[in-house]
Length: 231
Image 1 (cartoon, rainbow, N blue to C red):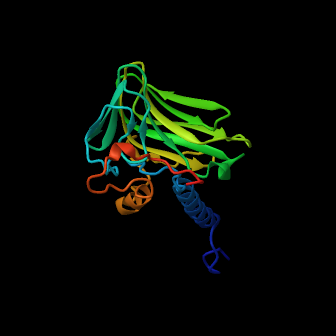
Image 2 (image 1 turned 45 degrees about the vertical axis):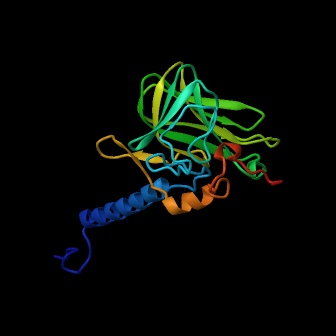
Image 3 (image 1 turned 60 degrees about the horizontal axis):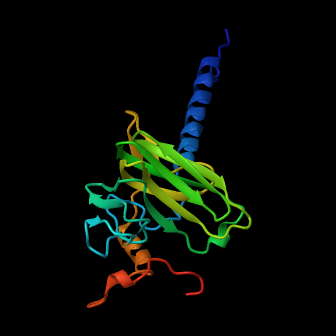
């Protein structure tokens, strides 16, 4: 009797097993590609070890605090905590960052996300292109994100992280990226949120020093945190 084994051929069961093994490899590769992080358009976005050339651990006045992030008002205090930045608001408290060369992103789809360590109330992210504003809110820890196709006639590109209605919110990281998916973080097998990457501190410092470089005997409060295309 001639059998598959007698002539060195695979049985149907073995063929099915090989096909499943190949499909598992393909699925694994696709998952890796999907989780590969996109470039982050924000500077100084990892609050676990932020660039903080002003050297303070608490900012309560309106204006710039940690590099590239600006407090919107005097109604909140920003603290540098262990592994995060904490916004403690008496009303609504915001940290804002403006994106340089915003016209490059006209008509493109972007996603803004933030990883929240803790919140006592309403946490929010905001994306503003000067034409329309969209917001995303969260009452729990984890990821909050929003996606927007920017207006072709946008006049700016700014993001905000906020604590609303007297809340206190701890942010671990934030990301603005091209595309309709967030690649800031993922959940592990236990459901914990894990950042997909940690930025190089030296690289972030170099980016921030384009906007601020402390000098001896210089009043840092007189320096701005944003450079436009015209200087």
